[in-house]
Image 1 (tube, rainbow, N blue to C red):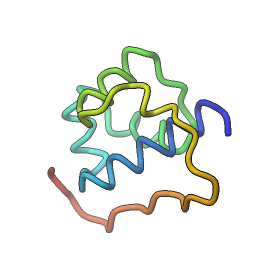
Image 2 (image 1 turned 180 degrees about the vertical axis):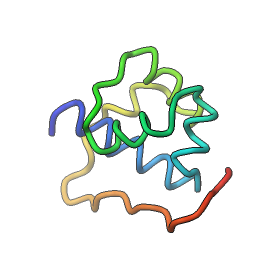
Image 3 (image 1 turned 90 degrees about the vertical axis):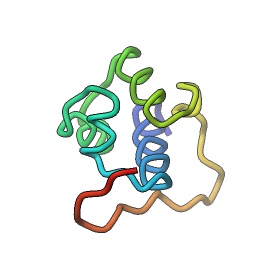
Image 4 (image 1 turned 30 degrees about the vertical axis):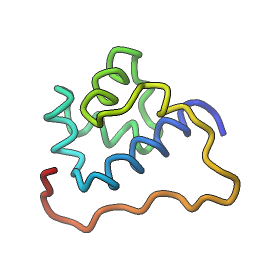
Length: 86
């Protein structure tokens, strides 16, 4: 799994665990919601500054976004549609 896929995996996992919508995370991190979506879809290659801001908004160290998922770990699920605020 490459770095972009790891970031996408963990960004979605952490966001869903916290019950945050992409919009809520984007507001907390000061980025566009479409950018958060693009990172999760592996369409965008975020800068270190953006990763720092997202990690801070999720209350984790940026290094947690790069950890290799455990062998056999299921992909993170999506939240049900609708606005969420953590």
